[in-house]
Length: 470
Image 1 (cartoon, rainbow, N blue to C red):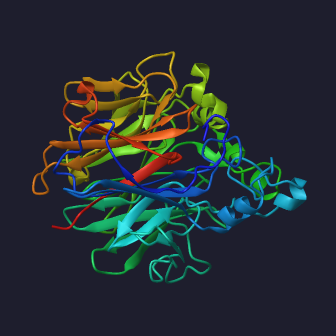
Image 2: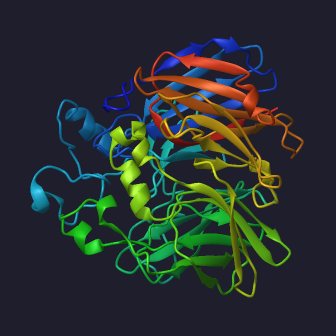
Image 3: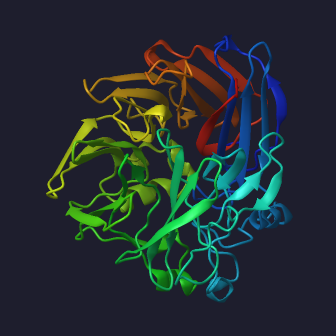
């Protein structure tokens, strides 16, 4: 599958054998990832969810399996596979038939952004829909999942089940998973959810927000949920009238501030701090430092810049359309004072940290980077040291697209930075995928193992490591 021309990645079930190096003996578990297995419009992120599972077991061959999430969008795409136009309304493209065909129609649910495990249940996530549950072994689609009724707001709120975002936050100290759903109509609000290990999902609270902000991700400390409401605002009239698809209906209001929303996990009043405008997709991590809240994110100067980058698959190989996100750190005091600075000048996306340090102080941030101006976004695996400002990178060069690297601890009982980074690399022209494993403390030394996959696993966005039980 040539990622520049779209196409379909085929489902795969195969053993993998290293073409370079060897699989670390301590790796035991499954890496789940999700992304666009096909491309239904020219937008990079329009495609049906293709979930892959790469299983590592000591003394056994590595095994990979991938399957499309059987949503209604997938079935419609399958029926119209040879068509040159999208069969349904998408985030970046309207369905054929003009405004009348698209009026009052939300984008088709594609379940293509991420995955999470809740008490052994594997969920494919897409922020404008409920989760889709999959069998964690076979990846068979089991259907939409309302988390046992937890996604229906309680009390005075009425209406259908609400969305569940693609970026839940896990607190290893309390064994809680928090998430939100962004509701745009009739009045914009954030619905907050919590799942405790062994218990049902709970609707915690509803927070009215003043505008229809694009809210893709959030961060969490031991005490607060952190939302950065940048001035990217949905023109709901343009979208619901059928005139424009969702992403083209998102407007950048650069004369307005970014609002940082702090929601106490223990309940009570939330607070809002206003600061200079920016846009971000993703947070790396957050923690409390005394009464200050510290968080790291990849900052873009505007939504306009980012929208241009994702609006065409061809922009993946066009240096002039290279996104210019950088890793920034924010510190916000209880007084409302905001301190912000750039941690490193290299372009970066897909920031991650050691998940065992979620909600705690972290030093290392990992991601996909660009180290030259002649390449594509993104060609390198990177580790950033937030204390020294140094970057440790391995660049695969032009023609290779690196996905989100995930940290896997070397020792299940330690919370240090000893571990492995696992990422997918895609050859854009050949349409092939490699699974690469790095020593997380020596990225510049190159991968310790490369596992070629016989079929493309698609352009994946996010994933999760599930440790094998002892």
